[in-house]
Image 1 (cartoon, rainbow, N blue to C red):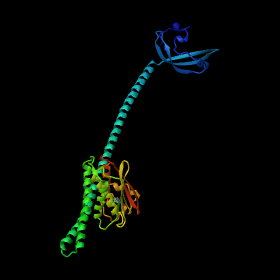
Image 2: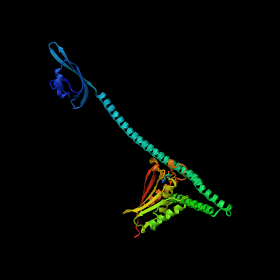
Image 3: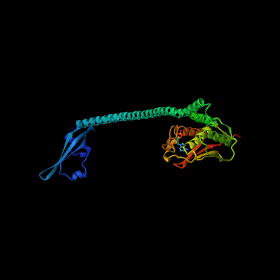
Image 4: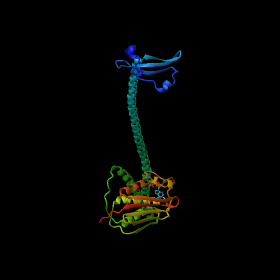
Length: 359
Ligand code: ADP
C-alpha cells in the first residue's frame, strides 16, 4: 500500500508511515480491539485513507500488537462525491426556498392588493347606496314638505276666489296672511335645498360685505315673526357694537333662520325664544335658546347630518336639512356650533364666528 519493502519499514518509527500515532489513552487500554479511521503515508508522500484495526495478542509471555490497514480511498472518494452532491442539493433547496419565498411574498402582495381593491369597492358601493338612499329621501321630502304648504296656499286662494264678495274683511286678511306666511316658509325651504345643491359644486371662500349685525338680526326676527300663526315672544339681546363687520349675509341668514325656526317648531307656541348676540376679542357669538322638547343626548351629534331627525320630534313637520345647512354655512365662515340641550327642558345653540373687520 505504501510502496515500501519490509526493509524500508523495519526499525523505523511508526510515525514515518502513519499519520496518526496512538494516544497515551489508547495505549492504556491495550486489550481491546479498536477500529478507526486514519491515514498512511506512502514513500512518495501520498496520503492513503485507511481503516486501522488494532488488536493485541499474547504469544507465550510476550504481548504483540497487530495492526491491520484497510484502504478506503474509493469509499472516501464516494463519500466526498456524496458530500458534494448533498451540498449541491442543499444549495438547490436554498435557491428553491428563496424562489418560493419570493413567490409567497408576491402572493401576499397580490392578496393585499386584492383586499384593498375589495375595500375600495365596498366604500364605493356604500357611497352609491347612501346616494341612492339620499335621492329617495329627497324625493319623499320634496313631495311631502313642498306639497303641504302648496296645498295650504291653494286652499286659501280658492277660498278668496270663491267667496271674495261674501267673506268678511278680517277673514280675507287671514287667508292672505296665510298665503304670505306659507310662501315665506316655502322660500326658506327652497333656500336650504338650493344651498345643499350648491355645496357640492364649489367650495371657495364666500364673498363678504359690511353688515350691521344688530339691525340685520332684528330684521330677520321680525320677518320670522310674520311667518308665525300666533303671536310669540322672540326676544333679542345684544352687547357691543357691530356695524363694521364683514360677513356673508346669505350664509348668516341661513344659520339664523334655521335655528330660530327650529326653536319655534320644537317648543310650545306660548313659550318664549331667546336670541342673544355678543362679541369677544376675536368672534361674534349668537345664542338661540328655546324651552321646548330638547334633543336626546345620544342624538345630539347626529342631528347635523343631512336628513337626520331625532326620535322625539313627534308630529312636527321637517326635512332634516336645516341643521346640515347650518353646520355647512358655519364651516364656510370658519366658525363652530355648540349645543346644550335637555329633553323636556329646552335647547341652546351657540354659534361662534370669527369677526372680520371692515377697517
Ligand atoms: P328638521 O327640523 O327639518 O327636521 P333640521 O336639520 O333643522 O331638520 O334638524 C334636525 C333635527 O334636529 C330635528 O328633526 C330635531 O330632531 C332636532 N332639532 C333641531 N333643532 C331642535 C330644537 N331647537 N329643539 C329640539 N330638537 C331640535
